[in-house]
Image (cartoon, rainbow, N blue to C red):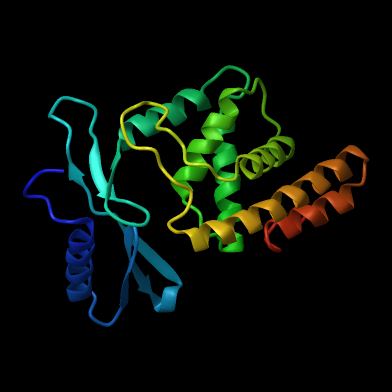
Length: 218
């Protein structure tokens, strides 16, 4: 952080004030680490993340962004994207890392889980790094059970460019997420067991519960 750089609280306030001036009749809220713009009473939401580049020109871009709870944390978005793409292209699981991340994000969205989408994506890539194939239901179940086992532990930057990052923005949201995660792992396991027993109807029912009634009909 440079001497001229504002605090993260000040940066978020600047962004909020600028957005509120542009959208005076729209709800604009600081929802650390972003500023949220809620259009149509929240039916459409934009999230804006302020950042200050800290790496020299010509190097992998590294930015200071607001931390989940306070202060600044470093982030290297291009390096993180490279990591996900590298895992996603591994022989045997080609495409699996991004498919798993999309399923995890769908679970988050349909169940209103207060967990970082970035965390889910990076953990999905890390989980798939050790796999040699990809089957949606089995690996989604294994992924949820693994996250439940490690209790959403903070993750080191796999590229070594930025700070460790957290799953949630506060102790309260972490408690809520862990509860929903345990339920998800249980439902995913029941779906896997039902599928393996040849009970397709039960498997679909558990998957529908997992995605809060939004799983596609057969």
